[in-house]
Image 1 (cartoon, rainbow, N blue to C red):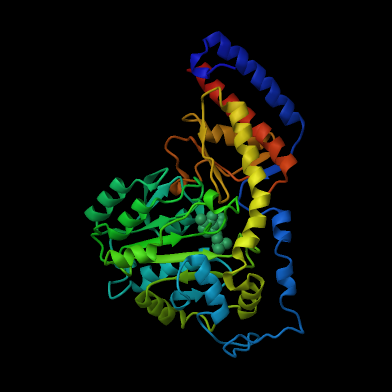
Image 2 (image 1 turned 90 degrees about the horizontal axis):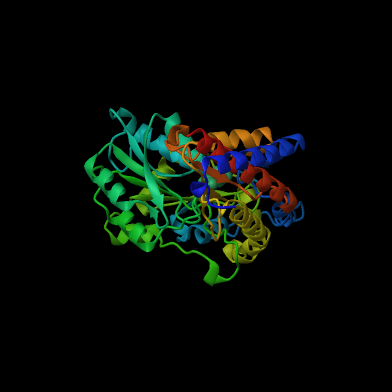
Length: 429
Ligand code: PMP
């Protein structure tokens, strides 16, 4: 198969007819496959079943500081859970507040507190004529949903292989005091798989901000989610807290994380880590919101993951299940689309996603075609604020959930849909 760009109109029409016939066959198969969300597979969830045995009616349910985990109390987390989450967030236990079951809730709460109360003596954001937020794109749709729900105006900033375009970020942040913050998924980013370079982290920490209360929402959701257990095959990211302190902006960041894709999504433990001033502020507000979070869950997570010491071995087992899926996705894309020269995609070393760039103006069509053939993808546009990908080209591929055989079938369909959408456009042009 030659590059599509080098084909004559007649050749393109012949190819279109062949691909359409193949697509019609696929529709007739009546598949039902799902690659929409980054959910762990059943095999991954099984890795954490011993968590359920970590606490039973015979277990000692007292935390090391004497707290009875069955009862009320302890707003910011039991010590052993703080150590676990500090390992995950690359921070010190005293800077960690252990929360409930989801980091997304923690991010929403943090944003709502800033809207209602402001931060560190600066007024509530909701009283300002407008609040703007930088959104590296492609990015995570649920981050964008938080901004949209609160009326925060989102400004897309392009991602490259080092992280967000820092020239653009620095320009926007210095020029406009309405720009109050930025979403960052610093490691194995959703969906590009990119890990921020040291230079990007240092520039984020040190840049001049017109807003004195500018905040980096550092969502390290994939901090330990490597495909390989070999350190040489793993990405590392500079610590934002250290970088901010060194740059003289110690309160600029909030780090978020959870065990969602380590143990059980929706039944894990989330945490925030921040500067002493920000920790004090969060605890002050939180004391009106909660008496404490689920300490039994904190205790069993701390025991199951050996307070963080067990993370690497546990994640290596996740990696063993994930690596073949990402290999398959990238191999199939290469085989089916490599020569046609119509698309590019990322090949990450961890995380949950492959970011796919098809020809301009085809993403919605590809996702619709796949749906009709029984393969549900993440909605086109989801990786952009307001669901609006101006080039209509980006699609997030989430290979974790389906077993390998199903993933193979789903990639067959996906690649066929990409070719069909691309050929339709080329023939119509
Ligand atoms: N942040 C990112 C970047 C994610 O990809 C996800 C899960 N898809 C989350 C947060 C959600 O985490 P949690 O379950 O802790 O709310």
